[in-house]
Length: 153
Ligand SMILES: CC(C)(COP(=O)(O)OP(=O)(O)OC[C@H]1O[C@@H](n2cnc3c(N)ncnc32)[C@H](O)[C@@H]1OP(=O)(O)O)[C@@H](O)C(=O)NCCC(=O)NCCS
Image 1: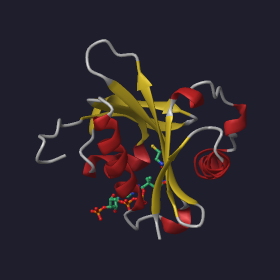
Image 2: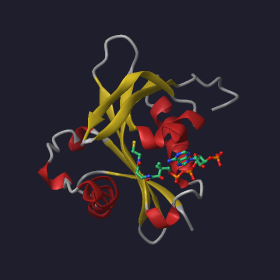
Image 3: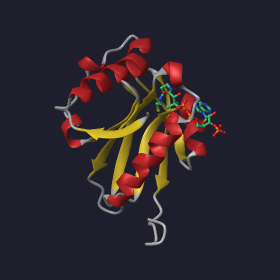
Image 4: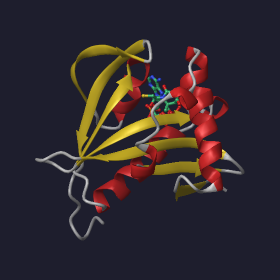
């Protein structure tokens, strides 16, 4: 059974999650997450879909924004064998519910252009023009989270 889990950096799940991120998001680019500044990890929220192992994951980092409480969505990835089965959509939607409950009103991100349509389908809009990050084209995307009425929550 597929479980939605949140965990901390000292959890055994974190290691699997970190490996999936490295395998999907860095190794194909000839890079390693182990070489990066990981100081935000402790301050971030870590989420995964788990079925015997971590099969999809994402990280949300609360930002110090003065106007709207904002969090940055990062490190979104799905195990390649399980892509295009709705896992990414399910994970983002579940994380948005938690973020909203924690007071986040805007989610922002640097999205790979190759995944832009995926995020568009989830209601994210592209802001500005593309730029390079980790050597590949990215765009800034964002979404305002609707405040739920008591009946909806
Ligand atoms: C991009 C990614 C997270 C999408 O997750 P997924 O589980 O494969 O996507 P889903 O099955 O939930 O797709 C939801 C919808 O988005 C569409 N979609 C998914 N990936 C897409 C892509 N790369 N381009 C265009 N559409 C895409 C699906 O067809 C589906 O559309 P539908 O609702 O009309 O059927 C995943 O493929 C992935 O990990 N890719 C490699 C790493 C990466 O690029 N991460 C994003 C970094 S910003």
